[in-house]
Length: 166
Image 1 (cartoon, one colour):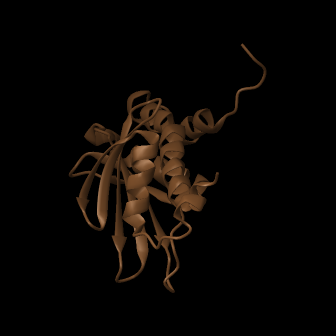
Image 2 (spheres, rainbow, N blue to C red; image 1 turned 90 degrees about the vertical axis):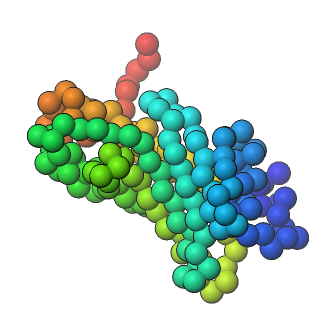
């Protein structure tokens, strides 16, 4: 049964759907307010903090996925360089670095104007895309910051696909 089939007869708040998905996937979460939820999603490289908030004003479901990144000051220019290159690889959402909080951030806004309903599949895809992109590019960020790799080389290592089998 598709996720949407469970919600066909109901007009649920988008954050109610997110809460259901968090329970379904057994993610730790905290319903901060009626229109906001925070959760922790375990990845291969680290645990990602994901917050989703619904804005009725502009009918947008905003998602922010963060993880700690503490580059030395002399590596900040290289980090910004790789952020630009990484964002060229991301079709939905984008990375940014919040220096004051020392957080790498992947964010996306799902615009649902015209009183459209948010589907569970959309929310699930949104969260999975955030974690997938964070997991995909985390090694590249690390290679630039701690491995002294050039951003282009670090991205190549992150997006290279393995061939054959071990």
